Length: 140
Ligand SMILES: Cc1cc2nc3c(=O)[nH]c(=O)nc-3n(C[C@H](O)[C@H](O)[C@H](O)COP(=O)(O)OP(=O)(O)OC[C@H]3O[C@@H](n4cnc5c(N)ncnc54)[C@H](O)[C@@H]3O)c2cc1C
Image 1 (tube, rainbow, N blue to C red):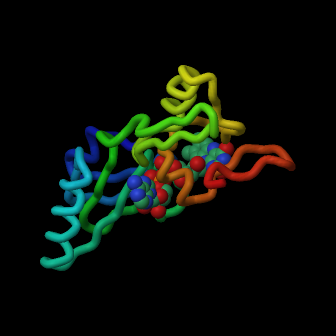
Image 2 (image 1 turned 180 degrees about the vertical axis):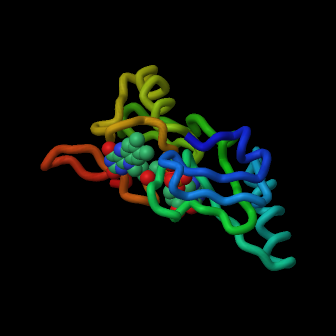
């Protein structure tokens, strides 16, 4: 899992420890408005933004070059419809948080990967999957 403590010191390290970066600027937005203001600001000034989930990717896909954005504070359920069996979560929600929330509505994920530490956004971005010939990736 991304170390929030290290991140606040401007340090990034992935789970495996093979991808590291020092000296990045951390950002932990709490609202969509904050994100919009921040992105506009970086766009005007020039700069690189990288969103980071739980930093479980083995490759440098989540390695920030300059600005590191974590949606650690933007987690949880936005909307759920038990009839259509559809739920909408914030992208920063960790997979291990999804099951207990869905259980309140008698719902569950159909399949999971090996672990549940990833964020929804990170897992969907990278095609994270479980096993099963007839089961698709989480992004589906
Ligand atoms: C112990 C372990 C077990 C694993 N088991 C499996 C498995 O069973 N099956 C499998 O398929 N994979 C597995 N993986 C791989 C893992 O699921 C993926 O690397 C996944 O991307 C990790 O999600 P994350 O939240 O850590 O994303 P990160 O690694 O932090 O980011 C992945 C990508 O998503 C982008 N991203 C993250 N958050 C956002 C956001 N809010 N908005 C836009 N882009 C964003 C990042 O910029 C990056 O490009 C495993 C990894 C580990 C370390």
